[in-house]
Amino acid sequence: MFKIIRYIVILILIMLGLFLLHKNSPWFQDKIEITKLFFKSIASDTKVSPDDIYNHINDQDFTGRLATTTKTTVKSYTSTSNDRPKTVAKISIDGIILYTNIERQKAGLKPLTKNLKLNKSASEKTDDMFTNQYFEHTSPGGKTAADLVKDEGYKFQIVGENLALGIFETDKTLVQAWMNSPTHKANILNPKYTEMGAAVGIGDYKSQRQWMAVQHFAKPLPICTEINEVEQKKIDAEKIELEVLERELQKMAGVIESDPAISKEYINNYNSKVVIYNDRLNTLRVIIAEFNKTIVDYNVCLKG
Image (tube, rainbow, N blue to C red):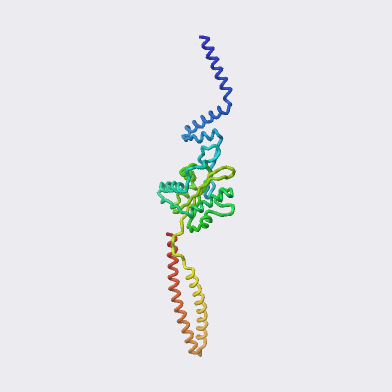
């Protein structure tokens, strides 16, 4: 009996020694940390993906930033690669637009129409940020989304922009990251926008391989009858000529009233000029009324 107890005590001492020997090893510490991470996720009711555990072991921590009118820093989705994002990811312009419209439809909004000019302006923004190594709405040269959209010949009433920087595996995760940010969500769900374009690219940013994505939202100017500037100039010129003629008639009337002996020829000349003045004035009034109607129609069209 005592012999069995002695063996048990020896076995316990051996196990305790092995434990003390290995408890500070990196492998052992990793296992402890993974266990903590796993149990923490259960306690907080937060799902921990295999990618999180993988990157914890390999000391990876990629952070994505999103920005609209204010800077917002968020945790991006993490790649399973060792130190670079996957270059073959399921991200595309059409995919970004698709999932953006899915979110709008969930909110009871009309989907946005893809516009090639907005795609181009978004692409210019992506290229410029990689080239000049910045992540802001205003470029180092002072250009904004409005400038880029105008450069593509797109006439808009309103325009907006969402930016993303980080590791994004799919269109869905990218759009979801934007939706998790109130300012970006506000752009995606803005009922005033009717069209959008997008661009996504991968490149070196601040010595790291990163994805950059851009959304450009806009509402184009409606196709309205433009104000006839030539007609406006003609009206202005006629008003000036009539003002000159009016001053001349006022002087002639003063002469007639002050000189009872004024000649009949002078009076007839005055009366002839009055007829001409009144005819031209009435014609101008009609032209101005028609011109003003085109302005009203144009303004109504813009608001529509």
